[in-house]
Image 1: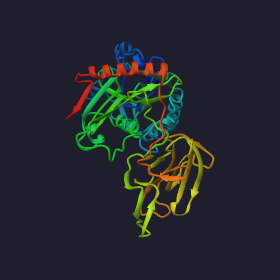
Image 2 (image 1 turned 30 degrees about the vertical axis):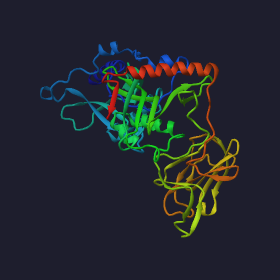
Image 3 (image 1 turned 60 degrees about the vertical axis):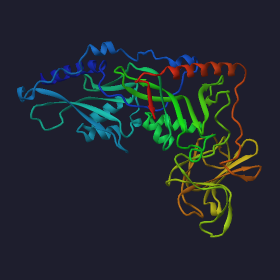
Image 4 (image 1 turned 180 degrees about the vertical axis):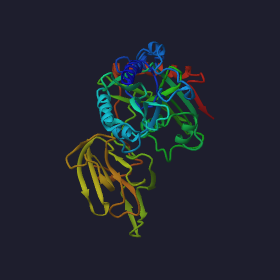
Length: 451
């Protein structure tokens, strides 16, 4: 009788799991825009349904808990046990570590695989386990299933079935998507003051990358400069932000001179940033093919730190922790990858036209870094090290034009795409919508400012 009662209860649990929202939403990463109706999509703030929250609200996942002191030893009760994944954890290992039998753990993980690959669980993911046990029982009890949120838009639930196995379902959440904005004055750095103004870190990083072809963030930004940014944000049905999306518009005012960029999708499906006249912000080469590094040595004559005499420094050095990723400065083909004397581990990439770039002192190479391989701008090709003639971990970066070394910080980069004709007309319409929307975002929910 007790077994039939447990199985009947589990069947009810399986049905209730289908309609309940249990976990707090998890934030995600920058997503892609729907190209068919870019302008209207960017600025739509109408909620879109991802499931049936009305039906979910009509159900209760578990009956109200009976006060434990009124239960007898024969009365089972249910409880949740949340666990959080750490580096190296597997779902099966997490379940077994929480007291689930190995066969049940394997079966539950297999059921989840139908809608979500358990191997994609990352550190920080929370898994909420449900058990049932008798009062006074010191064991975890009978495992009934678990819930987790793979991303901000959905939850997955695994529940025990009447035959003792497990089944998995997916619940999509009701979300609202629309633009959010922030603006402020730079007193310390764009990163510090932007975060203080409420700009999420992923949005700040995308903004910095979008300007990185034209702005030297170590030399060009001064106290008193200003910034504006508008990005795509997603809210849950309680009005709480659950996801920060891509940058729609950003502007830096440097020494009184404004530099604005707008996100735009071209006719061939490429998404990029363009200035007010439709000139692409992306250039053929990056000035700094590394994130978060400090400029430690400039191009030109200097006293060599190891040799001790004056020697022309044919590139620029960026100090960074060992293992920091190094990016290909532009599209091209790898001409050399290997040891190269005082350069240590070295890569040289041949780009279109007459440009080449070189990267030295790497600790190791990425898998793509093989002679003859084609690489795309921004693709990781290696990692910071201190191989060769080096006093500490850093990237030595060179740009060669027609075989002649050129200062990466001052060379005029090959221009990016320039919009024209109907493409330009469509861009100007998008730009007008962006400017109007940014100006209208004045309510406290959508705007943050720093003075």
